[in-house]
Image (cartoon, rainbow, N blue to C red; front, side, top):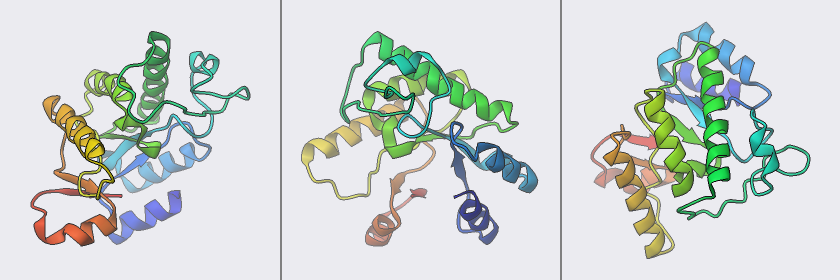
Length: 195
């Protein structure tokens, strides 16, 4: 993945990327960023669902970590609220991931997440607070050019994206896949983030 991102930057195929602070090749990714001077193009890809957490309080929450200390994110996709212990654990884990990126000499430009977990309302509450705390100016939208299977899902995504707009954390107009971009190219007017 690190090599693919490096090559994509070199070819001009991408203009930004995010880094996962809790994964094994984090240090290698940081070296690539420093070697090529991409400090103003890197965000944090917050990870709550793969690998091992950076903090210990989260380890004692069965819905977030398994008995071996690995993530197993079982939070429901549309959770509006979470227990205070879960909220606190999520906050400190995401904070630790952001801080690790900053300590590596990278000032994050934006935030997104593995498996789009940041689009869960209860997770976003902590994420928005952290974006403000670290003066990070952008958070990835929930996909808004992807066909949605239900009206409820469309409404949820609209409310989520409006929430980011309200907090002035949106820097793009649209987010979706390359296929979404192809299918909607003629009607899109504004900056598009493609996954």
